[in-house]
Image (cartoon, rainbow, N blue to C red; front, side):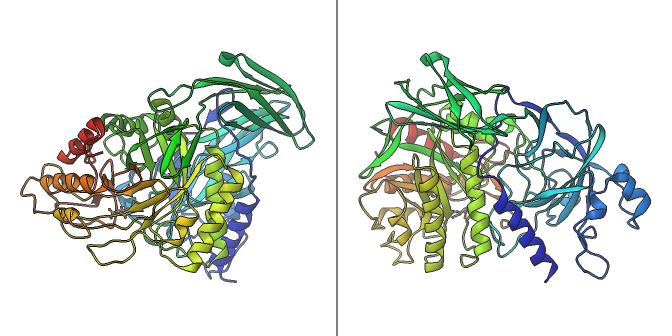
Length: 595
Ligand code: GCB
């Protein structure tokens, strides 16, 4: 079998064996961050994988075998981690070394860990995200592999870590692939590397690894999962005066329900309560909000009241804070503060799962969230492997953010073609969400049907399966001129809430000129005025997320002097400077003009 295929089936196998449960990272966890400077080796020819005759060898034995092996026993004399440069982890490689700006391929990372085992404790190695796929080795053992660049995964390493020095080695590869999720073609920077936190988590033999909390309007349900055994579990919500002790069954699950009428979480009042969960030896704590969300006809009801989603779409990139992917809370805070200034109560976290820090901080600051996986444009709908990968990414996102009140929408796809294969694929993902999490709304950003320009039609079988009618449209940019917004007549299905998941255009900050000239701030300002006027007439309109908050890097945008590798559809530029269009949206949100 061809080497890539073998590697990819190995990766898939491990991915499907990952536990369905999340490993919740929250207060009370004893964590050591492995962040910092990691040695790295760029390996564009995958020398660590192939023998010189390109046959598959036992995966990466030489590379996972510590520096001593490296130095003394291999012929790979060129590959010496000890004298290699370093990269900051978390952090993508493209923004840390000019030579890696466009790099898509393999990089080896090594981090030496000084470890002292404690009797009776288990240790997990946790990765917030690694883009796109990786193989992880500790000392001489391959722990496993992971695919999908935006969701967390972990390995138990209790029996592998040893007293003293340990070598953690990762093979990370961000090559795009036709069968991958996302696929070959997408409009954002393919930042590679260990982009989110790496943690060593220490827990007792039997520990609380996951819990799920739900609220139905009159009672709170809590399901706790113990790993490693069973025993009593105590859940307490002190501010609500609630406390219960339940014995977990053999499966480690303890379920309980509390009658309660907590203050509701909502954007104007993002109230969070402390929750504490204890077992005989373990204790974790978290902050949780309580709200209900559902649709009724063409309304979205948050806590039984109609809500209008004043949104904006955001990428996980804040170049004025830090080049490349956001690395920490500081980086995402900047994005959220700008969205607040814009007057938003809603964010579309595009086009892949953002960091847990983003989701948690957004919740504290009172944003409703749309979260999505990168089934973007035209992935391989017919492939079972591609499906398994997409479902795995979906489940990892759902697991990580299951307890976030802010998240009200799971979205499965963006601008995908209307084919039977794609309908079957996305239909299956939607069924999986309904089965795993019936408490939230399901959506997908669709496209208008290829129409007569003046009579766009929203028509897609997928809309029978989603809770919202969400679509992207670019009248005034890819389609016609801003003034055309006055004359197009839309046909949009009735009966469900309509959320415009994208509209917008490009402008270079500071590029002033006539309203007719593309890429000027004046053109974009007019485009926004006209689009908002048009959109506000859509029956059933419940919200919008203009594309997008901030100019973002994209290799698809080379126009010299204007784009220079940035998609210029931000309301602010990459330095944070506000374009005129920002104020159009801000006024619209503040005064609810046209609504
Ligand atoms: C879209 C995509 C988005 C692109 C945007 C654009 O429809 O969903 O990812 O970045 O258009 O700028 O063309």
